[in-house]
Length: 173
Image 1: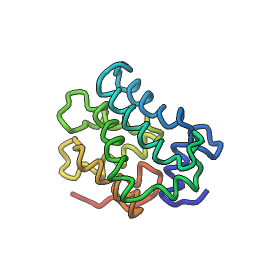
Image 2: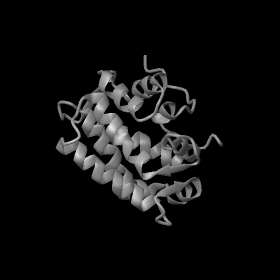
Image 3: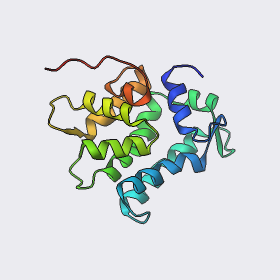
Image 4: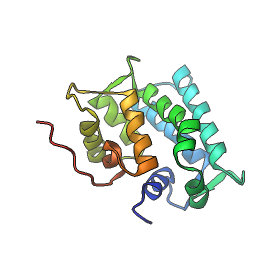
């Protein structure tokens, strides 16, 4: 598989590595994040995330067979899809992890979110460090979503480390 952002994200979403993303695999992200942060499945934030993720999957699944191939994903992904569906779905995962609902994640919350979503802890830690530009120990929702959007649409972002793409983290000392 290529090193492109699309390939990396697809591989992360294809939990069993069989070359397709099933509806169950895609929605399991919500369950993993909710479980990692101790939210019950019936919590309103979790329910909202399920709804948002279901909409993303249905939009990605061009032939409506319940399976998203890489070709379907590659054709679908980009700026329009991010703004139309992904912002809501990814924001809903952030909201699940945001225990005090202040729109910001502390390092531990961020790491739980990202590792439950399929990222290695070291990559998630590097992404947190890159996004915490003011070094206050918090990453806000807008910065998080902007980082993912930039990676998905431009292949550049402070979040690149979360997808295993090596990019230098600027020295902010």
